[in-house]
Image 1 (spheres, rainbow, N blue to C red):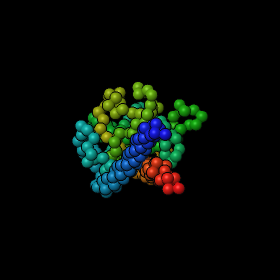
Image 2: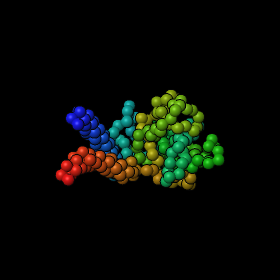
Image 3: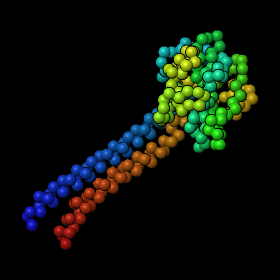
Image 4: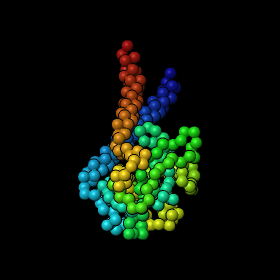
Length: 249
């Protein structure tokens, strides 16, 4: 009977190590989800705060060399003309749970040589023909826009990063700048109103807030912490309490 003691002791140490590792990993994942939730809430707070600042007159502002954090998420007013031939339809974007495109067009600023990338809105995708482009009216001449300054369009995962043509998965600002031969701002403008208050262009502009899914991260955090507590409870029951109860009996 004494020969089994070393094996039993070794097994207990393995179980302890596995339990501690599992508890540490799940607790770490729970903290990471809480951190993600805090980041999104802080970003939303910054957006809400900067949205109350006076609008930036983009045509009167010098183009920065990089994305100035002080400009991001502020309201903006600008005017110029659309460079319609360089419109890009970013695929696999959703709005209100529907798949479609983000319509992105450079706007050449009036009286200047530089342009800014405008995220004009969302258009639905043709479910029968994925290559069919939605018809988006693009007025000619000088247009005036209202929106907010934002980072360049967010990128989705793709296998081939060399896409070209009007339909693309992602848009790299530096490569796109060389492609169109025009200096672009290192930020984009998310359009919030129809140009010049003119007729509806059919695009949706119900842009999602960064913290709109913050409850998801809290839910994931609860699941990870619950799993961590479950592993700790199972270890205490099967390795500590249950053997003592058996011995007492």
